[in-house]
Length: 131
Image (cartoon, rainbow, N blue to C red):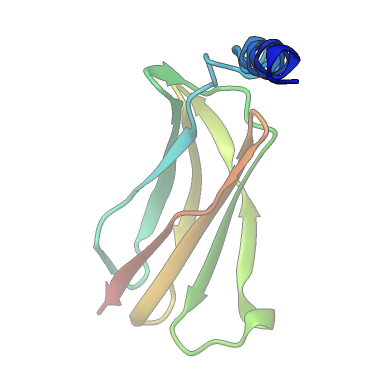
């Protein structure tokens, strides 16, 4: 009885080890994540028109083909329904922007909502508007 047991065990081990090879569906060259950096001054004067930008990249490549770039702005303490959402314009070299004038001093926030190359990125930045 032991004579047939060893070949069966060997056959089972051999079969499972052959199936444990590299997964043909695995993607060893997965694309790099899309990165978004908000570019703007940390402090802005009331009444000053400022350009708020975001730079969109994927690895070393600039992304000029984003599906959506939208800037969401609000003053600290404002309810969600008072957030302003403004579509960004492509300047080139992965830079998208809006021009905006702030009428009141205070602490503000901006989120750039970027959908590009099957990723959705939402970096946020806090800044001050002063008199």
